[in-house]
Length: 86
Image 1 (cartoon, rainbow, N blue to C red):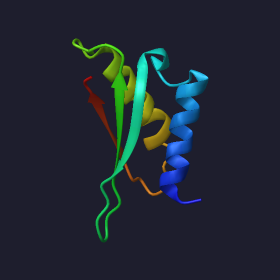
Image 2 (image 1 turned 90 degrees about the vertical axis):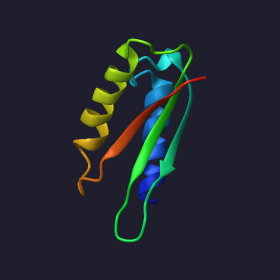
Image 3 (image 1 turned 30 degrees about the horizontal axis):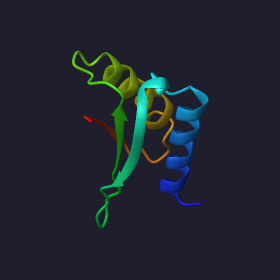
Image 4 (image 1 turned 30 degrees about the vertical axis):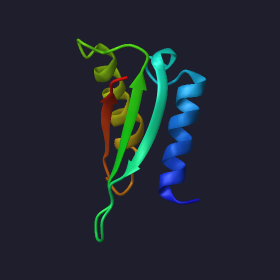
């Protein structure tokens, strides 16, 4: 299984299981492959049910991504986070 598939599977399982912060507010997610020759890069985009005007949801999600995905990433490829608006 390639790295992108493993990341995607982990994200979806965390959202469905409720481990992902505010998973009850998540209405969509995708991973964008921003890689180019010589450098890998991924961005996790999350759509929330309501606008996150004071960034309380985004902050918690960003912290979770850093702790659960970025800090455990062996090759230190950082996953960026972007909050989408409906």
